[in-house]
Length: 349
Ligand SMILES: [Zn+2]
Ligand SMILES: [Zn+2]
Image (tube, rainbow, N blue to C red):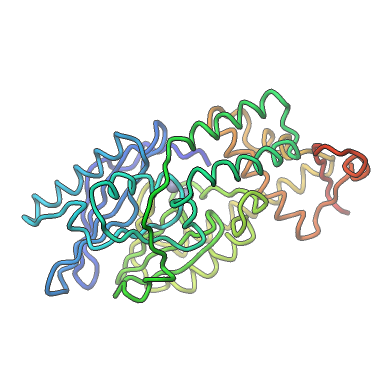
């Protein structure tokens, strides 16, 4: 689950769909330990070439410069004027800062249409509000998860600091508003990893954002923190994707290496979660908090990965609890206390 990638290529690569659209992958250093891609699509099946950018990288100056340099590289290679002002549209896979952060510089330079699923719209247009709202929920979640007071303050500061790097972006459209104007781009909403996660199909290619990644299973957090996320939605989305994307021959993800066999990768990710759920059920023969489960599952992790680990454990516990596999052992303590208290879960039967 630690999104560290050393194996992927850090050069621009190009691909061609079965109907002749050219796709260029632009690698970016999104955060110190996270790399990822934006994809530039050049489609000459029209009287004028159509330039589409899928995802935009993070807000970091390094990623911003790499995105701009990537467009320039393609522009020179094809001898066409391609920059933020000549793009026809920016299609976002979901509302996480490592995918939409580059929109801030794009919006300063261009009025290009930026499109996201409506469930993630506020992540872009009301960014500061989101940090406040989610911080409050996260604080309550960390108490219930049994994270000690001093650590909780540390984790919340970390969350607020990382998130404070982003900014609100004005004038954003949704797939609900403009989806019918996207021609051959087909959009499927697959909530779970993020509320407004979509995948985008063009001909025989699929842009999967963080819905399906190679080598790591995409991060999960409890729906308790953000509605429409959560492991249950994610697993259902995997099944829907498998049905919908049977004709896909190449999957281009937001991070890591390309996926050539999507169906097999979907099965592998489902297997990871199944095994994790079984492991947790086994651990909960003895009552435990989510923090205890997290450290048992993921061991010693540091930095932002601590938060990711505890959210991942929380998503799995939430999945089991809401489906009747677990009970709370300290219900009377919860009832008699006005403050939120750590919850201890126990396997039923
Ligand atoms: Zn994401
Ligand atoms: Zn991502």
